[in-house]
Image (cartoon, rainbow, N blue to C red; front, side, top):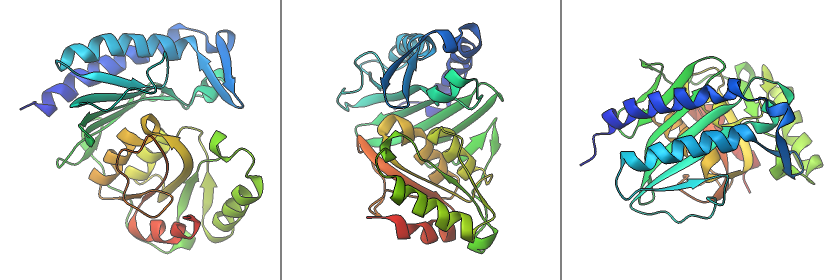
Length: 259
């Protein structure tokens, strides 16, 4: 049986080493457009290449599902690493320092380990299934239930909402009118971590990929939070989907946007 705490220790070292690439390369002068508001940079490629080489050596027979370099259609095997080398690439290109590395380990189709590293703040969020969630080694929990009017909500408005501006602004208006405020950082993985440690009361985003939310979904659950998809169902390992996560009452309020 795999020793997940030991694996997590090794992952933390690898992800922090990979995080140095964010500062070694200049993404503003080394990027391509994959689609509307969808960038890829040399940082994405270098981080993925570094981690792939090292992760596959950690668990014999494991494979990698990742956003770049033709790895986005890999099947889930007995042991699959799910990696987003840079979640928040648009932020990186614009010098808006909210971008993270997101990594999960799946056993068949079950998420057993999640790790998200923010190199700009040196914050390492992690979770092992059944063992709670942590930030830099300290236990974290979602915020306590409270009146929706007292909450702070994170809301994604990324590429998945292109062409749905009316629907999107209806959602934002509802949150704006009924809460303490809306935040949008442009990195779903980090914003799920903020829901896990109580900086947000909930986070909602649509049209995500598995590498965007796999690690974050485990971290939120292990922090005592609720994670559902945009159909109101428990999140598993769908290749594409949406996320509503956070404390119980805030998620209940945001269920009005499921479809």
